[in-house]
Amino acid sequence: MYDGWKIIIGIIIFLGIATFPILYDLGKAAPPPPEPKIDTPEIQKMVEKKCVEPKSFMKVEHMVLLKDWRDLYVREGRSIYLSADGKQYNISLSNTCMKCHSNKKKFCDECHNYAAVTPYCWDCHIEPKEEG
Amino acid sequence: MSISRREFLKIAGASIILGFGDISAINALEKVEGTQVLKDIKALKAKRWAMVIDIKKFKTEEDYKRVIDACHRIHNVPHIENPKHEVKWIWTETYEHAFPDIEYEYIPEDIKHKPFIVLCNHCDNPACVRVCPVKATFKREDGIVMQDMHRCIGCKFCMAACPFGARSYNWLHPRDYIKEENREFPTRTTGVVEKCILCYWRIDKGLPPACVEASNGALIFGDLADPNSEVRRVLSANYVIRRKAELGTKPMVYYII
Image (tube, rainbow over all chains, first blue to last red; front, side):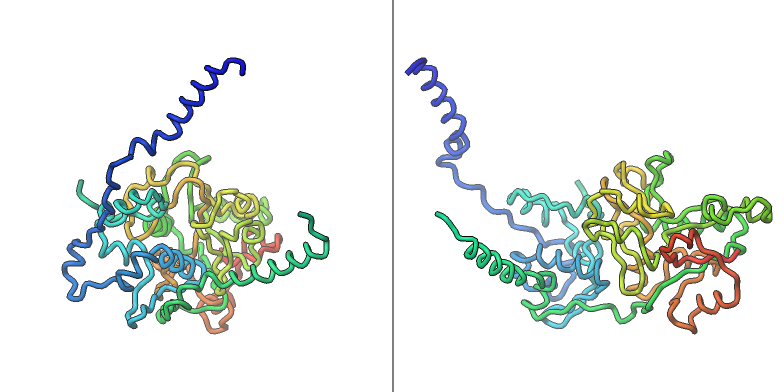
């Protein structure tokens, strides 16, 4: 093998770089999953602290719900959501969801950052005013 | 592995049939959850919305400004001076630009030099809808030509197709040019096309468009398909013109001059 040592050194450097992220995190505990805060004034005021659907559903399916709301509202003009328990809600991200969840940083961003997803809602929709 | 032509066609056919299962994805939520998404019962209903602009009722600069500001303020339309980057939903145009086909030399001076309020014509045969490759712009059942900013890819075909210049592209970030945000309504982002949406969100709540409300009766809005509606009454009592009607897009904004 011509220049064998060069090739071997090259392979070692490559393996070093390629496995660095794994080796770097080895033995370290995974960061704890964030817990979205729901202690906004608007939610505190509620007698029964309830979102449009149960928490377990919202946790897993909120993106599906938001996408369907968006399509049905914008494209078909259907603006009222009748939830499974028979309550009515206006379909609006800024005026319904964020009226209660006015803590976008603690409620939306923390989880989205943790999961490394970057929804582009806020490119257009105006986020609630927050301190800090 | 070799595959005979016959087998290939069988597999291809079967996959096409299986693929059709996905068509109803948009309503998945409704079906799975037993929930419903309904229209507001207060929503104004029409077969074909139309507008009449009584330009005689626009007398002072303030009359124009009030109408334009009412729209631009609630819809967070950015105010950009540079005409190459400007964004407008409703604005004024000279007679010769608004009606180039009927711009005769010896028409009354007051009409010749009067600014005309122009906006998206919500055409019954909209050229923009035909060219949009992603159906971001579409015609609603009630005739409103809608713009779905979520879907717009910013290709600007619609801007090329629209004979009225009713569409604006966001070259710059619009939030930098909005003096006072209406926090109830979204802004747009760079890279999408926007235009008048005939206040579909107000109509769906039972309110007339914002410009109509602010116009003190100079803009009349109603159902063209209903013979008893106010627009029909006004149209039958006045001689009206439309912008570039000869192009066949069937504009739905009429002018009393």
